[in-house]
Image (tube, rainbow, N blue to C red):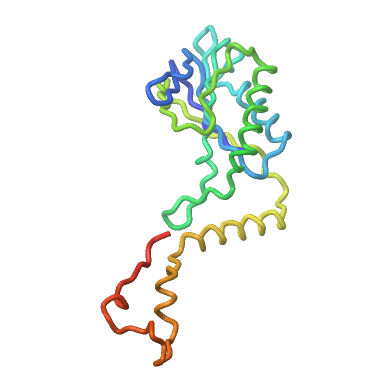
Length: 207
């Protein structure tokens, strides 16, 4: 699990023209869930986020207080692109947890945050929607967090690689039915055989 923490003076999330949620002083959390994440990683990340000391104390000493110490708000936004792996210049997201599983996991993450802190201080966007995130970074202060690496499951990794290979194959060009027929030799006695213009027309298309 990966998270980008930004200390903010204010932040908000909108979907289309509608503002979904907003906070004042506090932190904005962009969260990327991995296919390998479990409850252990979830609890580790919640603990780190809420105890991260990015605020000053009453005397002005920096890096002394957490968002809980200051009783500030937290805005969370699901961000699967944090699990990006570059293949050349092309982003690959096969390490991100599939959306049907990730939504439930993300909701559990929010629930754990609310139980550990104050429910009314935890805000979030709208899972799976195209969002506009407005962040007024304070400092700027941006910190990247990552949960401890889980033991590598070679079988799971092999399965993911196979799934990705299948996806890549479906994106390749597939000859259309008429193109395949054109390549089949026809008998001289075949009355449907033709050397006319219709034999030169290709209906091959991008999938």
